Image (cartoon, rainbow, N blue to C red; front, side, top):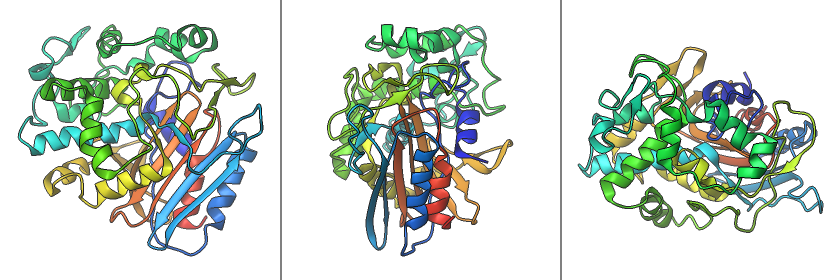
Length: 383
């Protein structure tokens, strides 16, 4: 089972088969320390051979930090990628958001058993949706049944296909509007009765953070996670359309197929992703974040245990979804934790072992091909 297969099934980002997922929950991660990263380097090179424009990665274990790149960061100039590139991390944003909500629970400011209506009264309504029956926990573990906004066909045409993207790439999309789009559809199922990945869940989670604290959710992420960990390359961009340097260009097909012209999609207004997938980071910062999280530096034991309580997914017996955190057993038997993400021109993975001793984060600066799971398996299973 490839990471692309898992990502497609978990995300269902749009009705268009090949459109990039706004917040793809990649499910891979790490394991034992070893001396040679040769298989990882070879897997990154294989991704480029398969059509990925460029790969930037960093691994960290007890021996230190290892960095590598393959391919290019700019098709026009041929400039190579940098291991220090910043990039859009898509759904990796979800782990940051879940961490903040769990911190607020630890402070007694909310309960994961609170209904959405307690904090956002009347917002989740329409076509069978009912915010008085959905808990915050169900938002975070995708058991709410709330329709996935990025699966809306009009949303897909407007933001993921060529004509719509170039017309609307700089539009600002308020989170209330994202929720309203989802409310035009019926729920996927009754709350708590099944599992389905929905970006709308984390749009709502970001709005709850704002309601509870009185601050933009991005300010809370900065104050509670980014600044304490010294994540100097990580930001919540809001409506800012550029990716700060150092960075590479990002490329997409903006089509229903993986063939045809390639377009530079680097610039966009990330409010279309909001708390489901708008953040920017680099591989070093992501390794630092997941290491700190798994080592208990960001959450008390009770909340970390809640985050790691997973919903098993029948289609993928080796994967489970917690609260913004994915558990997965690799082919060599190693259990790993992390998340991944996709947004226009960018596919990212960030994963770590249960004890936080071995981490890997990397990015493809293109969104239509590449087996990210092969890179994870190479790093941690030496395959």
